[in-house]
Image (cartoon, rainbow, N blue to C red; front, side, top):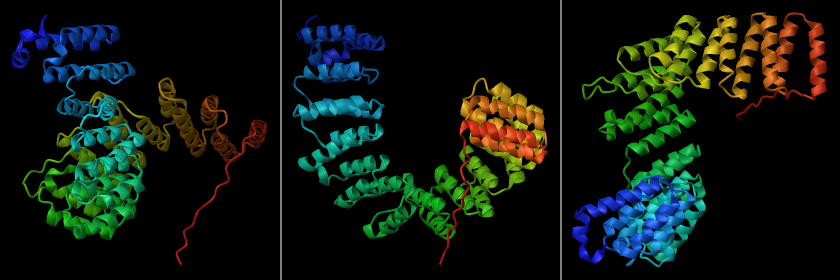
Length: 481
């Protein structure tokens, strides 16, 4: 096969390019490194690897994952690229970065840097994004140093990428310093550091930055308002949250399409205890555009507000409305309604919801769902049913979680004076975690409530033999002067 027989355009249009790419892709999928190397050697020997940048791009991006073998294969592949085309390598780097092959992206950048290949803002942004994705702050800092030396520090895009890297890695001081040093700031850059403040729960700093935006001639977009609302949720700042809501109404003209922003408004009012205002936001969704359809996220948010504020009957009613409107509930919505049933004593209804998770909604119950159901049964005095459920569950869940459920059953046995079942529950819990002092305390309390002083004495001897000590309780009081 002679590469001289084809021009670049003929090669790319013909079947040979597609066939060779398919063969190489098959070799990669088989994870046969030797076959990959042999095939590449053939392409190098025949000259086909040099005939088309497009073909070279296809070969490089056929690597299916980023294990060490493919990292070395990629490096060997780059060594034979002549001429070393910055456009081709930027395309390869971008492909790896955008498709989740971040280690391959960083290896491509390293090859370009050490090979003296021209690096531009496109190269730097893709590499910094890859570093951010793998939380490789050290690699990102090396790129940061290169940015300073190469003169790309004035690029707002590179600056934003660095701020985002430090913010996502929770290096907030570095992110703030980088933000301050950017000569020309934009809203994207501002949102990147706001995201970092939110992740670090630095609510006051985030709000202070939002207030500065008009002075910096920066516009507030949906993401900015979302960051401000998250801060208000974190601080339970009701009055400030209402002010942000007013700004949203005045400045965001497509709020009906931003489910996340609407959800945060509902959560903000709910966190501040204003269920009525949260319900008002929920009811107004889609009012301006005439559509009343609500997303499952909004239903879940409103359910969470009702549950956290003790509106359990309202949560159950809202869940039924949600199902009636044809909205498929998610795990969070079902967890909320199970908790509501537990607090209101609706045992039959709660068990129906629990069983519907797998039968109607194809959802696998989580440990939290099982905890709610056990709590529901225990509150209603259905101790035998709780015992059977935990017994069945213990075969497929981890020990720590099962100990918690046995402890919940033991506590219920204490409340309902079911000493025999309580002793069995305690034994099951101690079989899994013999050093759990909380189980011993619950068992001792149950014995004391029922006047079983001999059992208490034996229990104290066991505790002494095991060398267990209960942590001393304490309270913290914040005194405002």
